[in-house]
Structures are given as structure tokens and as C-alpha cells.
Length: 244
Image 1 (tube, helix red, strand yellow):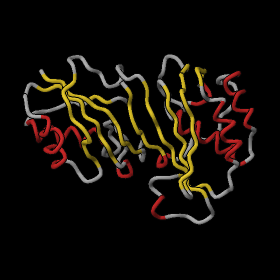
Image 2 (cartoon, one colour; image 1 turned 90 degrees about the vertical axis):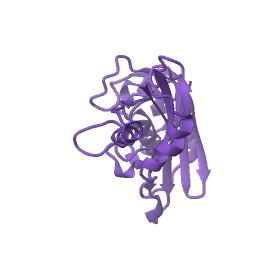
Image 3 (cartoon, one colour; image 1 turned 90 degrees about the horizontal axis):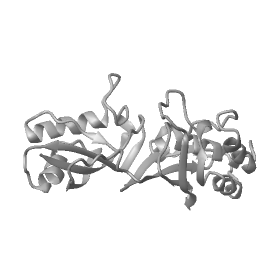
Image 4 (cartoon, one colour; image 1 turned 120 degrees about the vertical axis):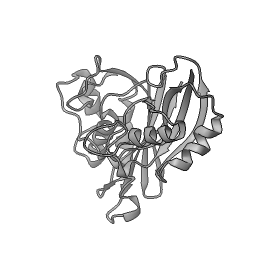
């Protein structure tokens, strides 16, 4: 058997998330259907994680096994010919036996994009959260500094999160300006359900002056007892890379 590792890029605007579900078309479903056409057999694809409806990816890692020894170009160029324009294979390679894209991952890099300013942008509507108010970026950076390190992120998850522990290590939370866009880059060992979006929602509250930067530290001092900020909308989130 061959274990094939795929690095996928996709625009999540038209999908109900990565995982197969009954309420809409998922990215996983489309990829598996394309692979079934290519290999002439059913294929189950396992991913490095899940993305919600409307969330995008530049570096989602997935893997599957097959007995067919096709050249790697069949799983890149050949599969891309069968996929819709909003999903693409960036890289395909053979992985060691037993490779698990989720449990073997050492960390992930997410980017969240905020469109700043009063005027709305039709071109940004699927890829950024439009925040009209002026944001205090210095305060947001101070708040972000409290998120770095190993903490109990119990205040930064939504209902239905089934994680057995809420302790996670965040290696970096960096803010970067690009014209009217503010990118929040978050790198860490692992993430709870909607954790990055709640981190961003909390930082935006700091930027709006609705909570202090030091209040972020209290969310870790009293995990699960104090409320974090709102969950930022999904369209601003993009999974950039999974580290192994």
C-alpha cells in the first residue's frame, strides 16, 4: 500500500467546511470524489484538521492509502484536472507508512485578515472581516503578547469542543499591515474549536477600546471563568501551513 500526502489550497466560500456533513458540500467530499474518479475506487481522505464553513486554506495537509502505484503527477496534475477551480493540489508526495496528517503534526500557522476602514470592499467580503472602527494596533499587540506561551485556553473555545485538554502552546501572534488590511498571524502547537477566531475577536475588542490589553492576561489566570471576545467571522481565516 502507498500512503499519499497532499497539500491542498482552497477557497472555502462555497463549502460547508472541510469535513463531510449532511448539510452541504464539503471540501473533503469533493476531493474524495475526484480521487475516486482518478483511482476507480472509493477513497477516504484524512486531514490535519477541520476548517469551518467559509474558512480557507493554503496549506491543508491530507493523506490517503492506495494499492495503485501511480506517478506523483497523477495526484497533482491529474487530480487538479478533476477538481473545481476553487480547490487545488499544491503538492503530492509519497509519505512513510503510518503517516497521520493530524497526529503527526507539530504545529500550524493560521492567518486572519481584517479589512479596516469605513467603506466596504466587495472584493474583500469573502476573505476578510470588515471592521469599520479605528483600531489601536499598539494595544492589540500588547494583548497579543499575553497569548504567547503555554496557557489554558478554556475561555477561547466554542460549545461542542471535544478536546480532552484545553492547554495549548502558542509560539507567535504577529500583526502585519498591508494597506487597508490587517493580518493576524498565529502559530502554535494546536488549536481548540474556533480558538483562533476567538483570539482575533478578543484582540479586536482591545483595539476598539472595549477591554484593556491586560484583561487578556486575566482570561488565562481564570480560564473558563471569564468571557473572551466574540468569535470573528469565518471568512477572514486561512490555514497557511501545517508543520511536521
